[in-house]
Length: 185
Image (cartoon, rainbow, N blue to C red; front, side):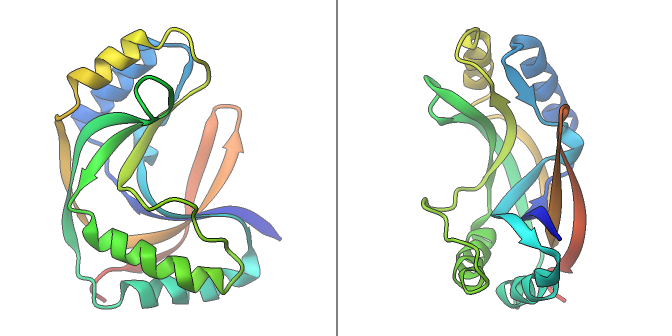
């Protein structure tokens, strides 16, 4: 049996992030805004994942995080991929995520051996807050993102990396934790 899997670091809700999400929801019906209770920093998207590979994936996460103590990250700034002019993904930035970048790099090589293809682009620290499902009526979204481009949305101690399951529903993806690897253990 398979599930849609990914490896992530959770980012807790904050009043400032909740407010930004609410502003984006009101700004355009073309946006599908993520529930801020589910926001996370994706370390590696796995896609279809065999349940039988869970122990090997968790071992790989443990090896990639060995010697990495808990550390502080700052959720700061806003933007869009590929650009503000052509938005597909609306994101908030993450500062202080260099340890996660090293973990992501280590996971790429180790997970390739388990059949998960390498990413075609370099890892970038960001939290997906919304996806654009159209090209029209995004001017208000652009203005909101520009006005919050350097705002601090919170600081957080990253202390665990999770293997997660994603279930797609008409209301958007729902995530659950499959396994957790604590940093510094």
